[in-house]
Image (cartoon, rainbow, N blue to C red):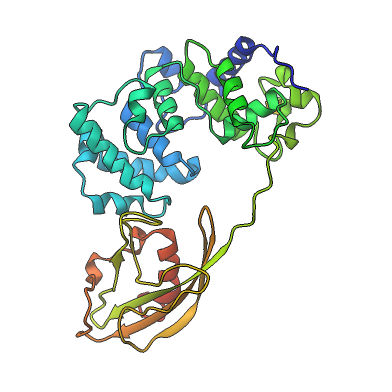
Amino acid sequence: MRDEGTNGAAISDELLKWYDAHARILPWRVGPADRVAGVLPDPYRVWLSEVMLQQTTVAAVKGYYERFTSLWPDVAALAAAEDGAVMAEWAGLGYYARARNLLACARAVAADHSGTFPDDAEALRRLPGIGPYTAAAIASIAFDRRETVVDGNVERIISRLFRVETPLPVAKPELTRLAKSLTPDLRSGDHAQAMMDLGATICTPRSPACGICPVIAHCQAHAAGMAADLPAKIKKKAKPVRHGFAYVVRRADGAWLLERRPAKGLLGGTLGWPGSEWGDDPTPSPPLDADWTELGEVRHTFTHFHLRLRIFAASVDQFAPADFTPAADFNPSHLPTLMRKAYSVASDTLGAN
Ligand code: SF4
C-alpha cells in the first residue's frame, strides 16, 4: 500500500520549519536560533547526553547530565575521574555497562585522539560504547555530517509517514532506507533533532497528535486512518521471572556489608548487597552466620526478565568477619535502583532511618 513517491525534500523542509519555531529547550542542545548565530555544539556534551539517553527518558536524564557536566566539564576531566566516583553518580540511571563504556570512551578520546572527538561516524563507532545510533547522532548533531539517526521514535514516524505495515523488527532495513531518503544535505543535525522532537511530542506511540503535526499532508498512515496502529510489531514473548536472595547486614558501629559486583554482567561494577545467583530456584547464600530476618520481596524488571528478590536483614557485632563499609562512606543514593529498593525494605529494621 505504500507510496514510494512521498517527497523527502518537502517533508524535511516542513520539519525544519517546525523545529525552528518549536524546538524543545534541552540542556545539551544548541537550539536553532543559536545555531544561526554561529554557536557550535560541544561534541563532549552531545556524546554524554546521547549515551545517557540510551534506554532512558529526557526527564530522567536532565539531573544526571547537569551533575556530570558540573563535576566533569570536559572529556579530559571525565577521563581522569575515578571509576567509583563515576559509577556512584550514574547510580539509578540503569544499564550500567553504559557508565563503564562512558569512562572507557572518555579515556580513549583523551589518549588516542588528543582529547578531541573524531568528527565522522565511522571513527566514532570505533570508540567504546558508541554504536551506529550514537555515532550517527554525534556526527550529525555535533558535526553536521549527513548521517541518519534511527531509533524507535524514528522508526515509528517513518512507518507512519510511509505506511509501512511490515512488522518490526523485520521492517528495520526498509525503515532505515526510508529515513535516509528524508535526511537533507544541510542541517542534518537539526533534522535529526526535529525527528526526535516530533516523536517525543506529537507522533507519540499510542495517540499521535496528527492535528498539529507539521508533516500531516505527507502522512500516508494518517490518510488511511491507521496512524495509531503503526508500527506493527511481532508479539514479544512474556519475560521470564527469576528469583534471588539479597542480604543486608549492618554492624553495631553502623557500618554496612556491601560488595562491588563484577565488572561484566548485569549491574556490573556497581555497589550492592551480597546475594545469591538469580535464577529459577537459587540456593540461599548468606554472606556470614547471623540471626537473619526475612523482610519481604523486592520486584524489579530488567530488559530480559523480571526479578523477585527476597530480602534478609541482620545486625551483627563489631567482630563479624567481613569487610564492612563505614557508615560515613555509605550513601544509599549511590546504589543502583534495585539495591536501593532492598535498602528501603531493610533500613527501618536495621535502625538506619
Ligand atoms: Fe505521526 Fe500523525 Fe504526523 Fe503522521 S500525521 S507523522 S501519524 S503525528
